[in-house]
Length: 238
Image 1 (cartoon, rainbow, N blue to C red):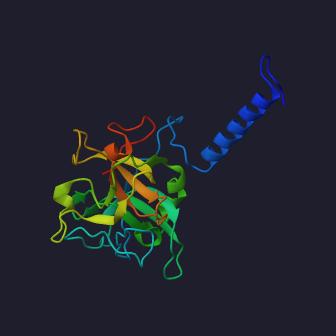
Image 2 (spheres, rainbow, N blue to C red):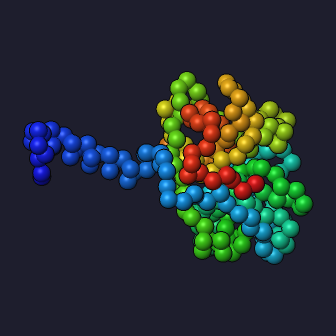
């Protein structure tokens, strides 16, 4: 270990420990990236294949609930429906197929695009073809901490006239998260302002550290301390 001029051995040891600790934190994914060489993926449209209908689930598991927003139906086979997919992850397999899932930032039903989020089973959507080039969800975003005193809702969408359900009024894909917890943001959209302030910025989240259950949801960015997106984050394909 090199000791610099004017620096004691004890001070040098402390600096070394601090550097090692920071490296461990970064490796664990607990620091939010403040800048990367290129923007992350905001997603692209993938149409359904000819065989299977495809559900939009709140977690990458066919045993999980489907997105709760009213009027939702499975994506129909035949290529007219589809999903705007952002990233891929490994979830729970089904029917002997691979356990690859895509997170969707929006879906297309017929001729209309609906900004609803959740997970679609890759083998049923496109035979997992997009998995050849989509980034992993675990490497496509960053962790963001929920700012006190806010609790963070995990909404099925970011636009209220889409989210409203009879028992709602606003549909959520998972339970609210506590102040101080973290969510993993993938990309951003402009939705509704739920205050305080005037920002309408929302992040697409693929996981949280409170439950660690890979709930896919839209979360209100000002409650994470952001009123404009970080420079490295792409806008979600919707």
